[in-house]
Figure 1: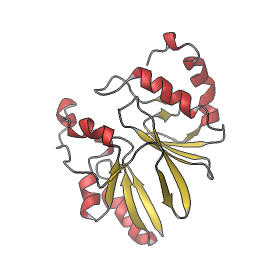
Figure 2 (figure 1 turned 180 degrees about the vertical axis):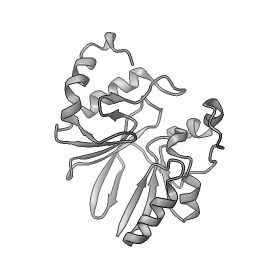
Figure 3 (figure 1 turned 60 degrees about the vertical axis):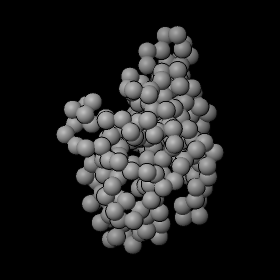
Figure 4 (figure 1 turned 90 degrees about the vertical axis):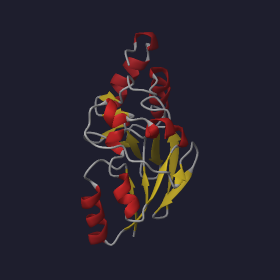
Length: 191
């Protein structure tokens, strides 16, 4: 009967909250993988519904930046204080199953992913996509940190499913060939 909401993109709360109600689910928290505007613009609607928000404290500079103005997006940035901080090594429980919080900076300083080893499932935010990875040309991003974060997830088994913040799901095994090729020559990496 429990659920989490992962990230809070614009105009998603209405449908997600209706789905939770229809399924008889109680949302325990909104987990923000990172603080970029396209992942947080509906956060206040979830908070108004009484759902707490969890994010890495390392995302504070991103959350406080006028991102929507910088990118010419006609929406105000949500202003909020997180209810819960997510840090490396935290273990969260949902439905009796353990989820590990991994800090994987690169796309942003406090980017986190959630790993459920028993389900071989990684909720990956904007770390890894099908055939790509998160941008590292944004304020607070770091190509060097992205390399280390991508190397870290390559330690996971090939069958690990990845649910990215954008696009279709993939697996570590499907992405391994191009990632290993790219990361085997760090000087040649153009992140």
